[in-house]
Image (cartoon, rainbow, N blue to C red; front, side, top):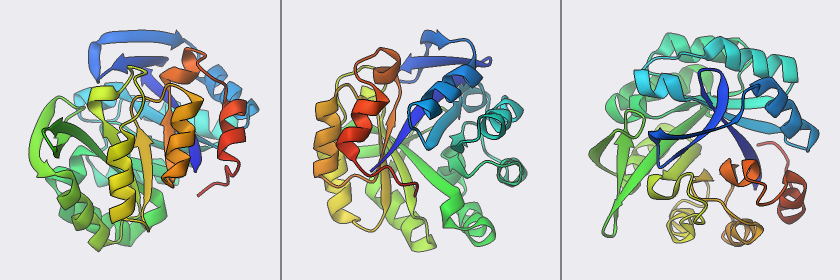
Length: 248
């Protein structure tokens, strides 16, 4: 299981939101380069960087900053937020970003994803399928979590899996930024249904026990944000549980 420490950026600062609510924002670090270097020094091989300004506005707002972080710190980066155009996606990859995270574009124009997978390869793309739970069903949210579609999570995964997608980032919005623990049942169900996919867990990480539970269900990756910023545990402690932090 790969650990992806998270840098969520608003106006160049590292923040965390609660359930994607831009009005419920906490600034944790004003210098993203310092935070990125700190994570690297603690053993991180990857960073998960989100351009929250881009997610809200529908186009990249902090692309150059994110590229600079990746190149100057010297760490692998997957990043997303407002990536709705092929030119923006390919520009990031050409500038040294290892993997782009695509959400709303995938849901609204899946045919573009198929073309991108052919052009840049499945290792360069993570599809972000953010979900709102209604009863026993998980529906895809779009537009920086501000809208909920009628598309079911399982249907979306099947559609993109058939196109050749391998990396999926699944966020339970109801748990994001709340330190309530991830929806382990949801991820176990997905891992059982799609054992060959590299599914990343996002939303609610709060303790080392959460990591132990995710490892037990063979989760392939986990995004950790607020738990690290709030000192619930350290990356060193997390890596001891995961044991194998090889880059995928």
